[in-house]
Length: 107
Image 1 (cartoon, rainbow, N blue to C red):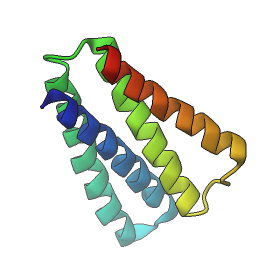
Image 2 (image 1 turned 90 degrees about the vertical axis):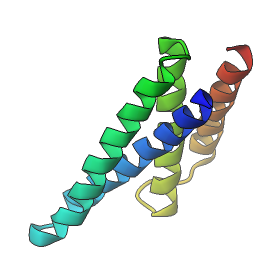
Image 3 (image 1 turned 45 degrees about the vertical axis):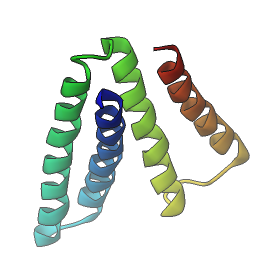
Image 4 (image 1 turned 90 degrees about the horizontal axis):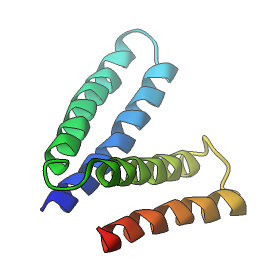
């Protein structure tokens, strides 16, 4: 169960990063919704990380949390055309994903 919480918390890291990006592009009232999404997602994400760290070693939990977040955030950026989908970028993100899976296998 801790691993599921950790992976969902990593996914929420991508949500708050996307909301932060939206906030930087908005002005006035249009900043309120992304700000609220950011706040809720960052609290839930770090809270989930803390819960997962009760039974998963700190270094492993943090590496998985960041790895899931960076792969999903980069995927979002590629889909929304904020970043280019180069071969190198895709291969390196695949390497990060493989390392996250590897940490689960050896933990």
